Amino acid sequence: MTTPTAAKTTTAFYAQAAISFGLALLGLLIGELYLPVTGWVRAFLALATLFLVTSTFSLAKCVRDAQETGNVVSRLDQVRLERLLAEFDPYHVQPVHTPPPAHTPPVHTVPSVANHQV
Image 1 (cartoon, helix red, strand yellow):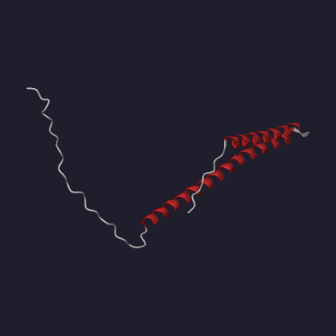
Image 2 (cartoon, rainbow, N blue to C red; image 1 turned 90 degrees about the vertical axis):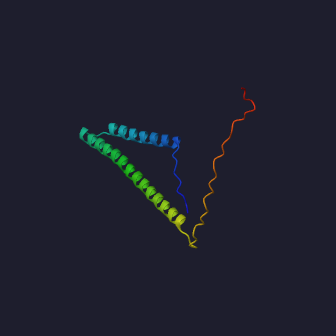
Image 3 (cartoon, rainbow, N blue to C red; image 1 turned 60 degrees about the vertical axis):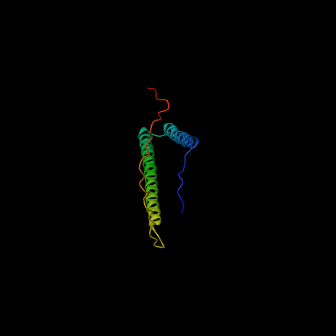
């Protein structure tokens, strides 16, 4: 049985992704500002850029949620299988009962009287 390993995102990878996203968005916005078109076309491109960025975040969230749901379902199935395997007894062996230990009375200690002064 394989156990799923959690993918670890390093800080460097996270920083690289954030910086590259920021640079791409900045480049697009600068390109829209210096594009030789009228204000209406520039406004349309700015709204299209905003829509693209927000839908990208929504898509990334949906993909992440679907992956986490798949991991949870996989883990639940694995726990159920492990429980079934733990309870399965192919030889139908009855558990051996050991008798409880015999009751022994508590041991009482008597203080010594050797150092007792009258």
